[in-house]
Length: 228
Image (cartoon, rainbow, N blue to C red; front, side, top):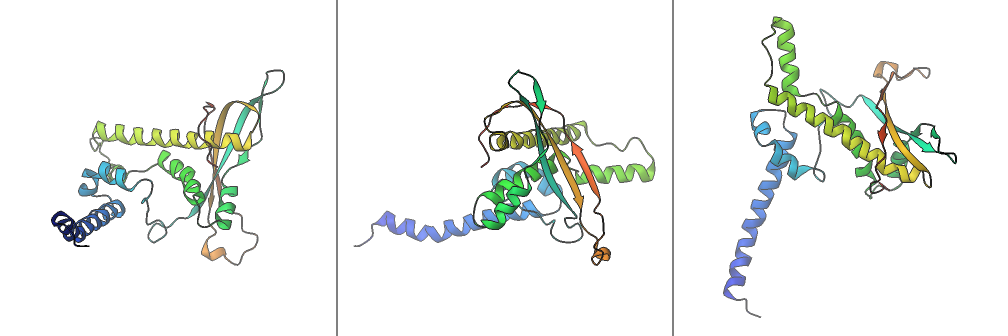
């Protein structure tokens, strides 16, 4: 069957559209993974909107700042008993079961779900490169006038608050799984930060890992779509 005039034109344009799409995609990925600079800052909203959550990635696996600790998220709930009294549950580890499930099911959405909680916690304590640079200069020069614009500080504060909000949403999504059939009033979260074993201690079976806990406040439970 002979192709029509418009069909031929569309077929001829297809390679051009494909190349343009590839250039756009890899340009966005490049801006996403580059170190902070004026260009990435200018296009941050567009880049983040395109890459998150499907194409999000980072270079923390590599030097000079590889991942050096493991984060484990715990959830605790206030549950109403038969008399209506609020009772605090035990702390429940909601990270380790996902890691185990991810090992057993490599090709599944579990990997993305597993990253969401840790990503939200990282966002809640995000350190901006520019702010860190200003702080270093301020300490070296001992000058009070080295300050970032108020708007930048407000944006960073809002970004961190959004991370806390996402972390609680993640906690809410686990309530139906770990507190099924119970009348949950509120929850709080705790994150265990466990440092990796130093290379110098690799042959020491008695080495004690450094541990640090970050505990969040109680927040009223809001039903959301379950994570699994």
